[in-house]
Length: 224
Image 1 (tube, rainbow, N blue to C red):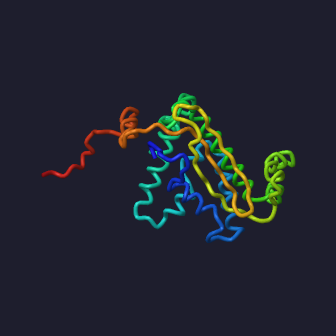
Image 2: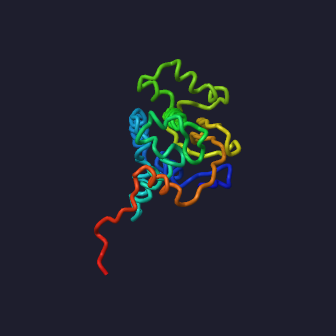
Image 3: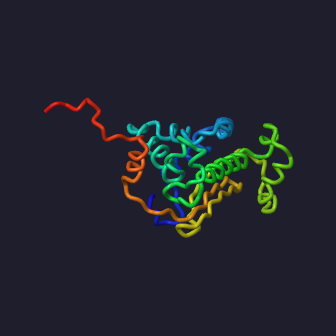
């Protein structure tokens, strides 16, 4: 996705997110449990370091571990946020990733954390939000668009459909999220500038510079 030719896209990670947070093969109660667990994880400072959606949806793949590592530790860390943010958020929080160096990493983290929470809340429905103790003031603001559109905010659990929209030219600092409950699904959108393109080994070059990757011999090279 480095050059991202399309302004509207769904990555393989987003497809896994959609399948995991859907009513496709789980009951409403099971989906609600997934939502509650995800909301709890969102409170942690490293919520982006692993993903139940990827663990679950890619579990049958023989290369699941490698795919997950590449998605989180080589793509998100590096492309979406600065490649050293995980090691030192204080120093690198104001610096962006390779896709959008002009958008601070802490801003990307904040927007994604809030957006996922809002999307899950809208998928749960208003009664469930009251049951977990969210205030009337928060819920009234959350449901403003749905009320104006005459969408029922409490007629069952919804799945979530996630999309990535490149709505600004490369180099702009636009980064926003949105979530809307509809009659059948909650739409969750991430809106960004078009990413800058990079070579296939840029992430490895960055990791060599910071010591995460080494060219030193491992000592287990087979003798010829």
